[in-house]
Length: 219
Image (cartoon, rainbow, N blue to C red; front, side):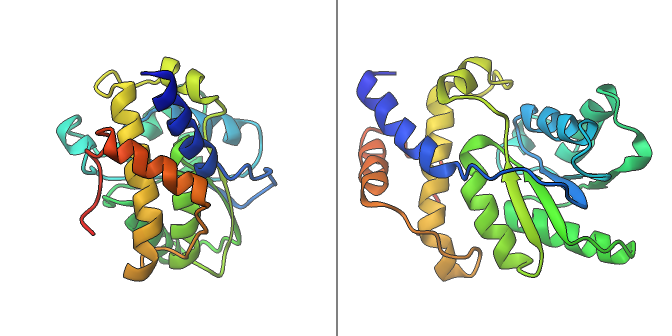
């Protein structure tokens, strides 16, 4: 990675972060993916007492369907139990394949079980905080939501990344795709709008031009 590419990627990284302050909540909702550090972060928050219920949401997505045979949520729940989370404090939603379905299917599952929640801590990858917030508020606007992620800097995250199947260039490409979705998805009804500063969009366009375009959505 060149210094110029790193600087552009860091601009996107900082934009995707919301820097929400944690508060006691009714449940921790872990949005599962290819990054098991998200599972660890969710378990750490539960064990620290931030909420009495730990929810894992995720089936097999665009990336993980090529990597794993079991749903993401089941693999993530096993990580949490290995860290000391009691099985009876875990809820698993294992059908969703994207962020909107993560929220919608979790909403439906909790309603089926008669569980009423008012505030959620959503745990996601660092570069998906903003999109997760925008999606949650579109799908479930009545609820309060705090979004957090593994507490790493950009360089720490790339060096400690837990999935060897994806390179740092892959991560940057995914991050570019997530920014594009923040711009596109409100018109499609998938998210609430989020302002994108000019300097962030300029960095996005430069990264696309540099070839970080493998995870763009169809416009």
